[in-house]
Length: 475
Image 1: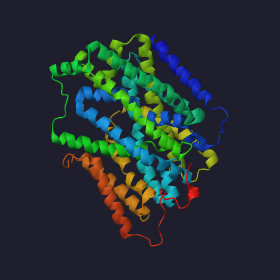
Image 2 (image 1 turned 120 degrees about the horizontal axis):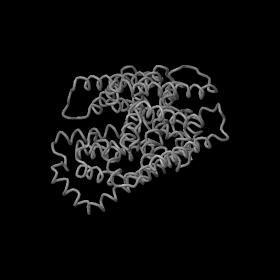
Image 3 (image 1 turned 90 degrees about the horizontal axis):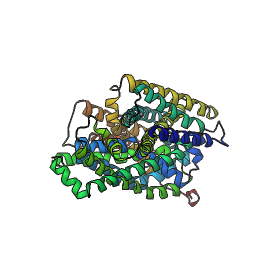
Image 4 (image 1 turned 135 degrees about the vertical axis):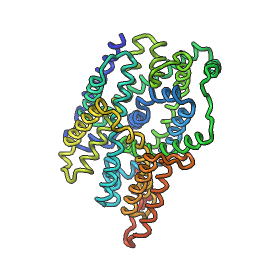
C-alpha cells in the first residue's frame, strides 16, 4: 500500500507538470525562468517556501537534534525566523531591481545596474561554485529518506529516478510546474509532520512528560557553553541573510508585482508552526528509538512506527517531492546563470533550449558525484552559506549606495571568499564567531575601501531603492 500511494502521488505531479505547459511560447525564456513575472501571491508563497522547507526540514532538522542536541535546533529555527523580517524588506527590492533591468538571475541584477562584464562574471563564477554542490545535497537526502521508508533502491537507481523527475518537471514549463507541484508537496509534508507530532504527544501523554523521559535518558535539553551560544547566534545571522540574498532570488522574480512579494512575505512565518511537532518527534525518537544508525532517520523511523502504511506512502511522497522540487529549481537557476551570464551573447530566442541542455548536464554530473565520489563536494557544501553571504554587500550597494564601484564589489567578493576559504581549511577560530560573519565583515571593508580609493567622479549609479519619479512606483 505504501508503494501504491507513493507512485500515485508522483503520477499526479507528472500530470500537473504536463498540463502546466499549455499555451506557452516555446522560445520565451522569461516565461521559462521566472514565469513571465506573473505569479500570484498563492503560487509565489508555495514556490518560495518550497525553497526554504526542502527535504532537510523533514530529515535534517530532527536528525540534528537527535545527534547534536538543542543547539542545532535553536540555530535552525533562529536563522529561518531571522530570514523572514530580512526577506520582508529585501525581497521586494530584489523584485524591483529584476523588473527594472529585465533580470532573471542574480548576476543579471549586477549586469543591469553597473553594465560591467567583469562584475557579472565574478558574481556568476562565485554563484556557480557554491550552487553546484546543492544538487548533491538533495540527492543524498533523497537516498536517506527513501531507504529509511523501506524503498530498497540502490543509490544509483534512486538518483536516476530523482534526477529524471526533476528534469521532467522543468522541461515542460520551466519554473511554473515546480511552483504548482509545491502546493501538493507542502500539504503532504506539513500534514505528515503535524500528524506524527500529535500522535507522539498523545502516546506519551504530554510535552512535559516527553521532556521528563528525555532527561531520564541523559540527553541534553539546553545549551551549555558560552562559545556554543556565540557560534549559534552568529551562524543564524549569516545564514538568514545569505538565504534571502542568494537562494530566493529566482523565486522572488516570478511575482507579478512588488506588492505581491510583500504580501507573501507576511504569511511565510506560518510554516514555523510545524517545527514544534518536529522537535517533539526528534525527542520521541531519542527515547523510543535510541540506537539509530543514521540520526537523519529520526523523523522517518518515528513515522514508520506510528503510522499505517497508506499514510507512510504520503509521507514518502512528501519527502521525495521536497528534495526533487528543490533539485529542479536549483538546476533551473544554474542553467539560467550559465546561459545568460557565463556563456556570452546567446540569442534570447535560443536561451530556453540552452538552459535545458545545461540543466541536464548539471543533473547528470551531480548524479555521478553523489553515487561515485560523494565526499568530493563535502567542503564546498559546508562553505556554501559563507559563499552566498559574499553577495550581500554588492546587492546592498545596488539597492542603497551610489558611490560603490564595480571594482569595489569584485574586490570585496574575492577578499571575503578568500577569508572564508583560509579560515575553513586551516580551522581558524575567532572567538567562536561564524566564519561567514568574519568574511562578510572583510568583504564590506574591502568593498568600501577600494570604491573610495579608485572612485570615478563621474560614476554615480542611482540605487534601485530610490524612486526618482512617482510614475516609477510598482503597483
